[in-house]
Image (tube, rainbow over all chains, first blue to last red; front, top):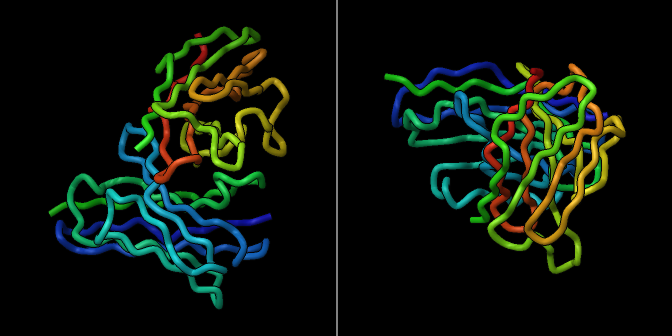
Length: 118
Length: 112
């Protein structure tokens, strides 16, 4: 059983960067597919990118090309999402989740509210 | 990107009655491996989402059998045979055949 715990809420200024972590416990870290998603206030879900730690390379939505970096640290079983060039439209709850498109049980973090405001 | 649409967007239901949500994709979701990567997620108020159904019709572990998924190609349906109070929330379909993964806008289910 995988348990995901995300870092706490962030308030950032426009143009800055934010880094959100997702600590995984249980299961075999390297073989899961980790996804990052976001949910804007009152809006639906948006997949922004993902990574399989054993392969290393992340795959991001083209919408975030150049602004999004997803990485994984196997030594601490933690996945990171860093978004740069923040704008007000990036204000959202960011979720990490495992295996949302695989035939195994998915698991979700509790969500991290990122607020972009001057 | 593949556009996912859902109907209705709001679904008031009577406890114990059935409910049905439709999801359509702008392209076929049949992958080159022959599988169809259409998933359904439930998000209860104040909670993170969780998946109910993967690959059109497979229930995830622990999901009550009153939930069922069906469909093919571009048209899919989630059915709840008898709605219970704990089913209140927003339901999303998500396609995983084409990159990037995309979600429908969500259907809000509440009790009449």
